[in-house]
Length: 57
Image 1 (cartoon, rainbow, N blue to C red):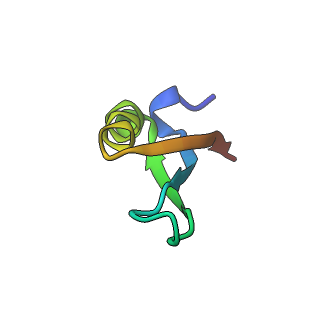
Image 2 (cartoon, rainbow, N blue to C red):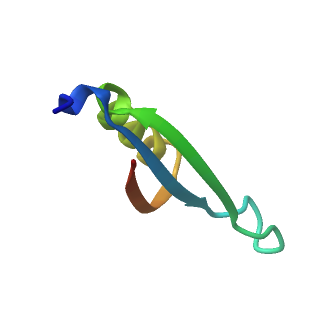
């Protein structure tokens, strides 16, 4: 059985546009378990909204 540190996660993020005319942008990040918390914090600091976090099997 593999340890939790080997798991990878896909984070789907949406960010509001700078102006009302600009559409929302969608991004996807793939990170390891050890980077997950830091990435989530970074997304929140930059104004992103996390849509989903999914384990990559």
